[in-house]
Amino acid sequence: MSKIIVITGVSRGLGLAMVEQFIQQKHTAIGCARSPVGEKLSQKFCSPHQFTAVDVSNDREVKNCANQILSQYAPPDLLINNAGLINQLAPLWEISAEECDRVIDVNIKGVTNVIRHFVPAMVAKNNGVIVNFSSGWGRSTSPQVAPYCASKWAIEGLTRSLAQELPSKMAAVPLNPGIIHTDMLKICFGEAAADYSSIQNWVKKAVPFLLQLSAKDNGVALTVPS
Image (cartoon, rainbow, N blue to C red; front, side):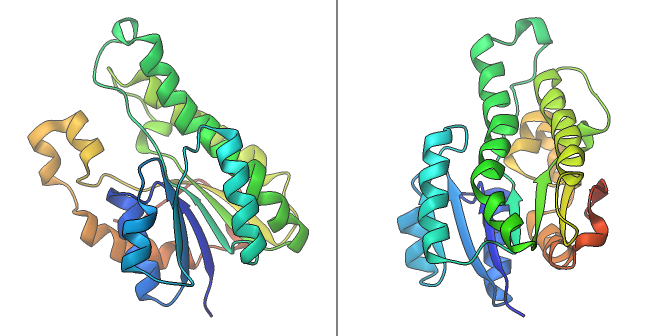
């Protein structure tokens, strides 16, 4: 059965790979990113798929985007908060206020904005799964990534709290995607990032895993199988 999937952060990396895989499996993908990806992806993937430029940290932009999408489509069956930033490696006291703000604004406020404007329609229908991308660093810590760790620990708590507020047929899941060879991982691991799973291998496991999530998974901290 075809699903309507809304996903943030689709311009590259995991987000783009998931979009391609969802569409390949005959689902409707609706995506956004800060960069102007809409025209490029819309040319590649025509209707019913839709893509637009939205800064998830901007509540007004998210509200306008959600209103436009919900006027054209049914509420999403799967809402994936994938957009995220990581700080440049440094001790916490050396990371600027501006950089900390960017990480917190996208990784926490961005997720909250998307939930605020999409989830009421899902609740009214008592249907759908919300997946908030967390991290191994949302359940453990390492030096020099304190703002990122803080943001992902916040996602764990935010999602589990949200899970307690949802009606019986819905679910909210904090999801650790695993360690994947992405641009973000290169910031942390340098050349050693290439030793980890490729995005292409990851997405073949992640998309089926995401599609089988249901109300029974509500509030459970999950990890994409390696």
